[in-house]
Image (cartoon, rainbow, N blue to C red; front, side, top):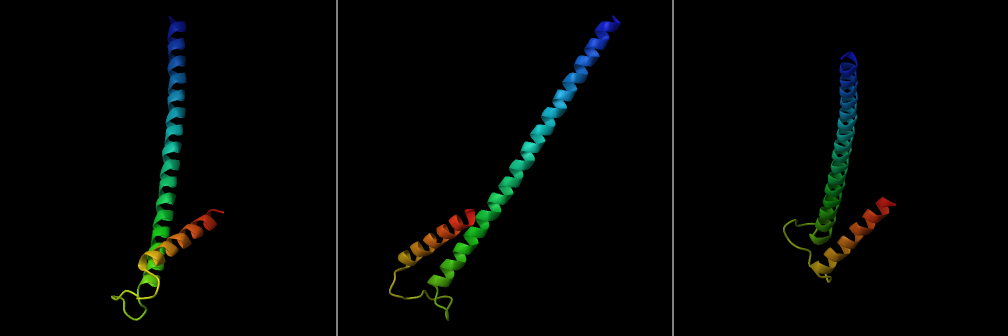
Length: 95
């Protein structure tokens, strides 16, 4: 009878250790995913802020914040150039 109780106790000890290891692994994964999510969100916010500033600086007249700049290049072409500039900046940052 003593042998059976010792075997059951040892099995439960091993099962608890395995459950502890699994829980630690899950918590590490959740922590890393949260960190990655924060980093990606911050990078996306920074890039969208930079793009907004570039668009505002390029599309609005310097002296009047409520009037669109009436240059020879259309707004779509200017916006396309700024989007390309942002894309190039993002690729340069990755390297």
